[in-house]
Amino acid sequence: MLACAIMNIDCVYIQTISIAIGSGLQLISVIILMASLVYVVRQIHEMRLATYASAYKAAFEILQTEDVRAARRYVFTKLGQKAFNKWNKKDIVEAEKVCQSYDAVGQMARSGMLPVKYIVDNWRAGLSKS
Image: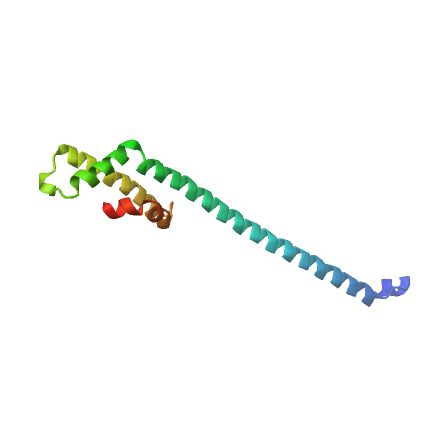
């Protein structure tokens, strides 16, 4: 106060300006923080989509290899009406390939690596026939 009186300056005016500048800087900080949070949430979403894309590619490779497709075709055409007790070794091997491929993809879905919706949308027919 004494310094303000000596320099003939209105201290209240200076304090008001200081408070206004401080409040403005706080507002800018909050805006920057909110923008950063939006950016981080968007990045997390994009990372999740990239993870799903990688898992989908892995599931596709598991389910769409030629030997697994051939095994599914065999199971659907040869084993659909055949009683289990009449299955031979080849029948069992082909059915195991199909089951193991669906099991691997099912574990990916169960662990959250791949949404179940992705699997159902793309392989619904094969799953329902199995």
